[in-house]
Length: 199
Image: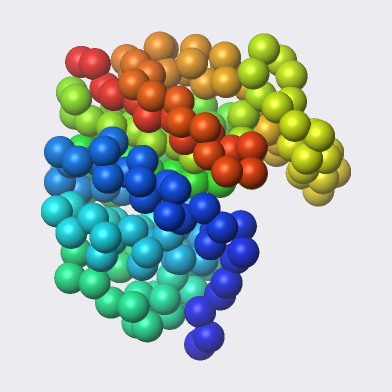
């Protein structure tokens, strides 16, 4: 099949990579939550050769991810596994000292965002990293008119989705023994949040 293409996924890969090179410099194995089209996995894995990149998503997305992996194979890239944030039992076995997720927190429900932090808090080792890319609100306000319009579109499509509040993310992090290491400004009014597991 022709690999699926997402312009949103392609837009900011280089700036995200710049963050990951530092944030995951000492990581050995990263679990990507919500690999989607698979574009991120084939872009980041060969450029971060010191770690193993494990793609994951719901099963219906696996054919597209595998199509990308077939076109752009990398020795440190692993075929996707099923991870459903609504089912804790799908968290994969194995050792992961980093978790990366991009453009997911505003797409899935808030309950699933909470589940993500809960699972990361349970499974990430002390010193492990959680990296989250996407748009966020600060002090209860949108950071741009475009984000406001984007949020309205998301909520019209799915009332459970929408741009999350930075402060709510921080509360979740604290609850699950994660401390904020960095909050990077990214192009197009996005951010990359880097957390570290403290226990």
